[in-house]
Image (cartoon, rainbow, N blue to C red; front, side):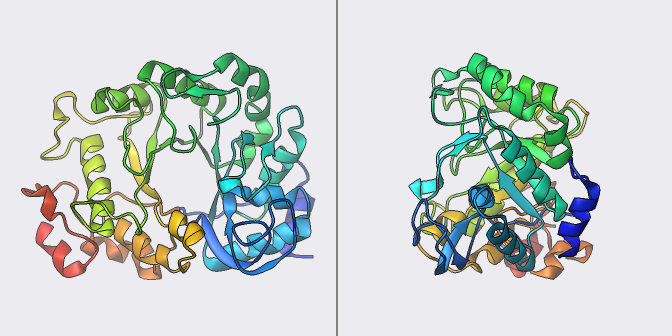
Length: 364
């Protein structure tokens, strides 16, 4: 019996073992001898060589075969992952390649799964609000909050979940009008008052509100209602932006949003000062996603995440990398001299540096 499993059994339920410390390190998709996914069958546990596995769906393996799920999770840990994503408790299977997630009315397996992740020292970001079913009414109308309170609050608003997860996120790249978003923020704060509370962006939509709403106001309202940070998603390598390379766009977007949150020089939102959480701390911003799409759908190598994680860590105040494991030296404090100074004034944003050290050096 492995030490983590033995430790989990000794702790009993809810499981509260030690967890990893330091920056979050994760990747949504890796290759291996795995079931389901793009090369397997949706409802089959048959293993397929060199198959892509999307880790949000690990619970669908766990509820069917805990031994197999343990093997997959150990692969993730060997890969360098200390972070994993889960939820919502009601969701459709990713890309139609996995069974749908349905824990409404039967939360025990969901709770046990989150505790099992923690027993291995994994830190979990729990995504809360669905983008499907009767809960999601569309971008204009937002969510059926009464139904969410009826079905999902009893799942999320429990001591077992609070003890098992590291932080929570509003949902998967989903947004509505500011007024609708606040209902979700308020629930996140009420259910998880001591956890980091994040919003996950779309690849080209980095504001938690409608496109016709003021971006600064969107973020200030989010912070006032309990959001503590931004999990930034950028376009995958196969969909390069028109003005920059994908890596340059990643570092620019991280730099740009951090300078706005912290009200550094050149901030176009500077009139109201920094954007502070309810704890009085500037909102955080991290590299959350970019390479998963290409690794999963285009069968690109897992190593694609390395250069994206390294590039993200070249930006000052970026700590977590959730879709790529950086090279070891980029995680340590001695990488700081090579980071892009967010406080620097950049006269030509289109000339924003990428991840190459000789280009970054000019911005100190």
